[in-house]
Length: 126
Image (cartoon, rainbow, N blue to C red; front, side):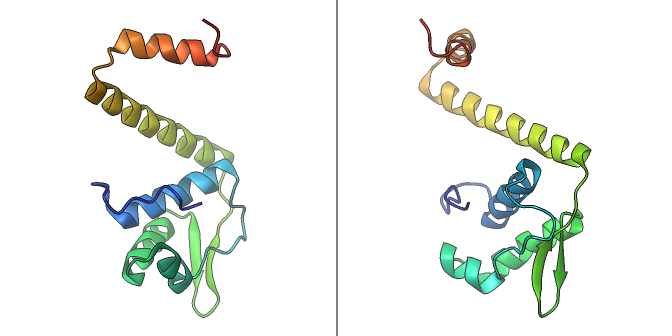
């Protein structure tokens, strides 16, 4: 789940973690009642400071996506379908922004990018 966390990214690690968890909740990868990895466990897995994980979990708790029960862990809350849709839309827009930035860096024009996307959406036909 955390394979796309990049310490070299300009996006802070805590924001990358919270975004990945937000997307997992919106996509149904994480369901209401599911436990998140413990702070220590996730920090060790990602080789980062536990305070970074705590900050990500606090952000999600502030958004009403998870709840922390002291001594028991952090758990996914029941999120409305509308909220999941909003989160999926936000993630789709973020992905598009990344794609546009990378295309610009490579000198790919918007029409060429649109044509490539249309081609892929139509099954990769020429």
